[in-house]
Image 1 (cartoon, rainbow, N blue to C red):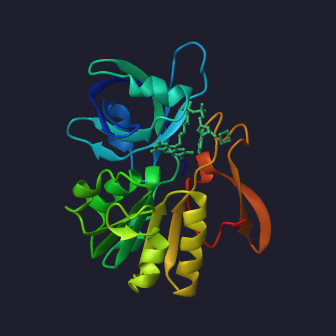
Image 2: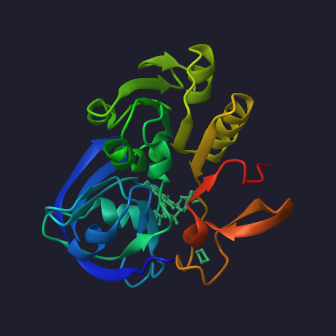
Length: 257
Ligand SMILES: Cc1cc2nc3c(=O)[nH]c(=O)nc-3n(C[C@H](O)[C@H](O)[C@H](O)COP(=O)(O)OP(=O)(O)OC[C@H]3O[C@@H](n4cnc5c(N)ncnc54)[C@H](O)[C@@H]3O)c2cc1C
Ligand code: FES
């Protein structure tokens, strides 16, 4: 059953710059927080009269007691620049929760690998908190890691950087291969190229793998087909909408190009 999305005016509880161009904002949004799940995202309206389309940002943490959602995002363009300027007590319009989220029930009593790349790391934090069982967490960055310390509360954390400045010198999939780390199930989010190689690694090692896909979105509610990915359904190639059918897909379902 599709979840009912709510629109809410959220108040900024806190706002921090945690790495170059990376911002960490907690938003008081009790109605959306009360029904949000790990791996879902919210649509945030820039509301400056110019950028009318909302921007999709993953939920990094859910605090049901405070009625808040945490988002961590990179400043890349007009919308995220406006969000980066939000200060305590400012308000912003949200719609959510959107999408399906991670299949956490499949991780129960299994060895779960959580694999994140760059700005794909944040949604794995709430997933890591909620998974019962052994967890190995592999986080990859170009340079300048963020959120790694917080993940340490929930499992064994391994950091990889493209430039070798911190941790393993190389990408997350190269790390899994080199260290011969295998698990029963993978949950991941990151650049498409990382997800493609991770999907091949999972297939080779017979591991179930779920990937959170990112496509440019317009409506965010399944009405415009702006965010489709090609998938296999009953052996045939077809399209699914990231905003409505995803963002999380079984990696075997995705047609990797
Ligand atoms: C389901 C989902 C969850 C996401 N979660 C996060 C998150 O937790 N943190 C985060 O920092 N970003 C996340 N993104 C990406 C984020 O939505 C875009 O960076 C944002 O919409 C850019 O808006 P803008 O107005 O700042 O940039 P624009 O001016 O619209 O674009 C600036 C640049 O960003 C690129 N861009 C825009 N939208 C996307 C997109 N959807 N995917 C990839 N590149 C894009 C453009 O190609 C361009 O180069 C997510 C995207 C999706 C689809
Ligand atoms: S963004 Fe319009 S259908 Fe997904």
